[in-house]
Image (cartoon, one colour):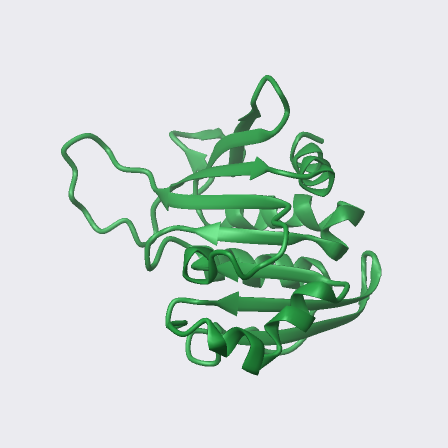
Length: 189
């Protein structure tokens, strides 16, 4: 589905903040909407030292969002899913906020909390930079403070059991800290 429907242009990202400003609910009509959402977050200086969790079923679009966000922050080269490696480090040398370190975690296969210490994750989460965490519930109680949680899911029509791999997404972002609220503010500019 494109952002142009029925002959009229519709924005690829549509959303509204909650009344308390701690939550944003919206939708991505297509991958262009995902990219626009990522670009808005990347424009906020708060992203440079944030921890974001990403929730959604397999195929929801979590890694696609991460790729768009890291590109918008100036990361060059291949951006692959850390599904088997658990973490992929990234570095932007000349992004919109200067040099930036980022780590993309995927705890889908994470099973033993002792791995946390052995792998040095405590040090990574304590260091400056962006942390993007897929399947955070598998590392519950081990991560530090989370600034914001992004939940992505398919937009389903009632009674429709179609594969929504490329369809619109319902998106919610909830802020838990001042950093998270600054990120939410970037979505409303």
